[in-house]
Image (cartoon, rainbow, N blue to C red; front, side, top):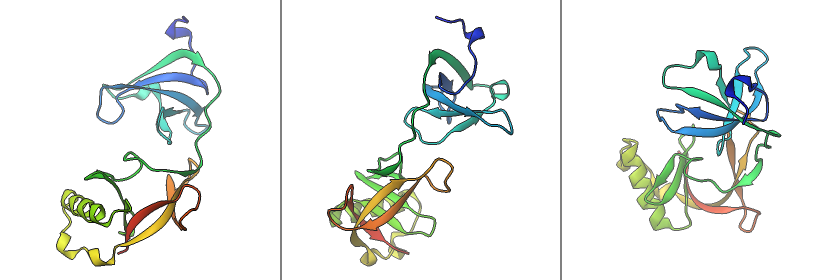
Length: 177
């Protein structure tokens, strides 16, 4: 094992980052690059799609970056169609994934209209939205695909309307504003 003091911060180096969000859990990840303008390390935690910009000497108290002995190629960022999880959306409400878009449209990832209504009510309650003013009668079943976007895109993923049988299509209940 190489002493930590002799390890260099370089793309492909595995790391452990403590202090992500408000947790004290150490998260594994990889250095994907070094920002040319600031010298910050670009770090992608395992299971995440975006880079953290970390300058090790400027880490706040409670945050720690540990360089690990392992180094290899930087893993490709998954692209294309995917099935979302609770981490990719606003979360799961009554067992249904829910996502609200900037324009206010809401998508409930379920083919079951009853489950969609129950999840919508739970989501509205959690978001302090008055269910009475949500036009549930405008909710319609639709087929959609979710597609990852490049790392520097404005949004992590897009949802596009699709047809039943399209590759990776899911049935959802769509509630436009």
